[in-house]
Image (tube, rainbow, N blue to C red):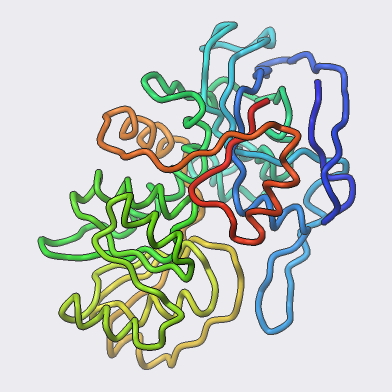
Length: 349
């Protein structure tokens, strides 16, 4: 088996050969067909997340090197452990990567992404920048019948993340409008899911003209440039008082300031992005405006089933997808790092 691996943080990935593993117990070996490249892979490749004010969160202790990134995985069951049930050799599945310990109270209530002892594929455990991945249990393998295989993997992260964040804006009333900050891979997914879930075209803000154009092409109701100091006031005016909900897929101090500034009284902002920064707001503004700010981190296994079911319904528009060779993993990380990717890049194993 071959894998593109981190040998040193920040350095180009290296191709390594290993014996193909044999599944034990309930394990299932998946022969990877495609793996999407997520912006969080860039932070993991760097070994840190930016916190703002000159501070970084070092995440290098979370895995042993060499390490294989990649968590938007789709492929075919290649081998099954003696205790594995529910799948057969040759089954095609999307892999749910946000795996916990499986026995703590958090996992047992279905919130595995928040497990204190996570075993997330491509985060703590070797992931999908490879031609094979070991999955601990068949319950994490989800059918994607009716979805193009090259597009299925990103639903395990960008699609799931967009879906779960949008659900946190519920309930919306008739006439409510929503704002999406950032039209990258997750933001583009959110445009499609917003129309499918709420039946409304979202407003989109992005600093990149190409991404604003892509958002309009994908069905956004309107686009704004957050770098324009007059744009947030114009948005509030255009929406007759502001939006009911905003989702920040960037996660920077400037993007969250734009999101909260665009909210109407009683509105809600959800932070998803991990760009980093430090946000401040006078405390009295929370009760006076009645706004709230929350966070959303990927989604549960149940929500992945719901995400794929909605995608199979045909009501979710396709986002731009570019397919590259697995050997292009480092180039793709660099392109994401410099904002050169519109939609999603998937690596073909």
